[in-house]
Length: 100
View 1 (cartoon, rainbow, N blue to C red):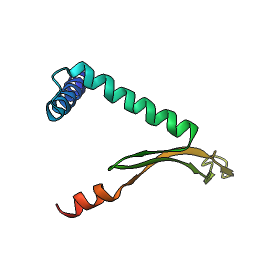
View 2 (view 1 turned 90 degrees about the vertical axis):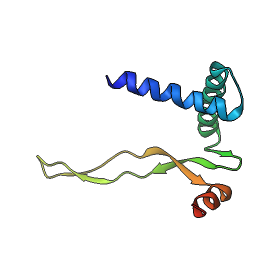
View 3 (view 1 turned 90 degrees about the horizontal axis):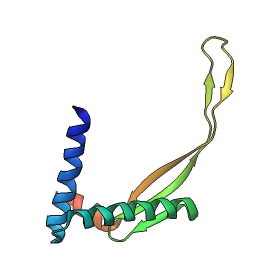
């Protein structure tokens, strides 16, 4: 089903990255990938942003609460302020896609 297809897509991804990097050990590529993800998450939690050289910046943004209406009572309420992760592409990434 769906999970098997998704899992094979993950395996394909890690295999392609391993080939591109010239690393024969796919499990090493997985360790590096998940370590990178954890580092980004920790940086977002601690500093609110993380720069990835030659790629771009992930940053944490606060979205203010919106005014919402309860359909049943017609009363207006304010939703909670939420945190959201945004990405700002770097110069190199922007230039790459301009040339396509």
